[in-house]
Amino acid sequence: MRSRDQPVWDKPQPVERPAPAPLSREQIVAAALAIADAEGLASVSLRNVAANLGVGPMRLYRYLSTKEQLLDLMVDAVYGEMSSVDSTNSDWRGALRSIAHRTRTVARRHPWFTDLLGGRPHFGPNALAHHEQIFGAVNGTPGFEHIDNVMRAIRTVFAYVIGAISSEASQLRNERESTLDEAQWRAASWPYIQRLIATGRYPMLEKIVRDATHQSPDVEFDEGLECVLDGIAARFQVHAKGKTAKRPSS
Image 1 (cartoon, rainbow, N blue to C red):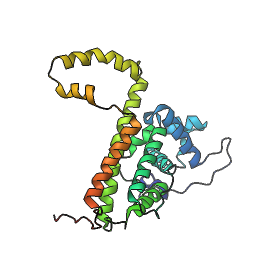
Image 2 (image 1 turned 60 degrees about the horizontal axis):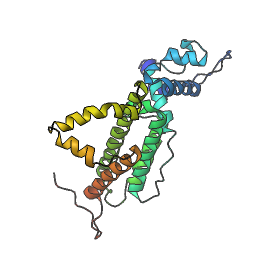
Image 3 (image 1 turned 135 degrees about the horizontal axis):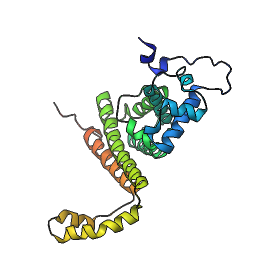
């Protein structure tokens, strides 16, 4: 296997020779995180990271081989920011609710993180520890004695979380790039929306505008998450009389 094809976790960190600017893998990742947080993922390159650190780009290749490895390290650093799940807690809903909120919190801190969540699995040490804790918090609780049920429940929650935070991140990007803030955009759009409603061709749009409760993003996220958890409970969990729901035959 070529050195550049090795997983970054198997690439030993070299012994640094004396140099004007001391360097480490941790410093490289911190610089990359700062660039991504301030300018977006597209601005992250080995050249830009090297410039941020005041070193030549070639020095970085002693610590990693490709930009993909740098992204792996960045993602794992963000996983490390998530607090551990209490795997001794028998409340599976509380465990999944907690990790959903913490994932949303770090995604707000690092908006680019959402773009890397839905791709290939993450096998960094922080990511593995994170997922081990999540599975451990759910596995073996009533309704989740079978590992397939555990995986389905966790994947379902993560599908909701990734979709929700991706939508929020997209909206934030649009607001940053737009010349109008949210209130100004709504004010500018309102006459057009009124004209659409007046045509009578969009009764559902009219109902949404007139009757829907337009809640804050925090409340919308919480209520959507509870709907997902209720659905998981109905599919796998214990009924009121204490009997576990039977798994439908395939």
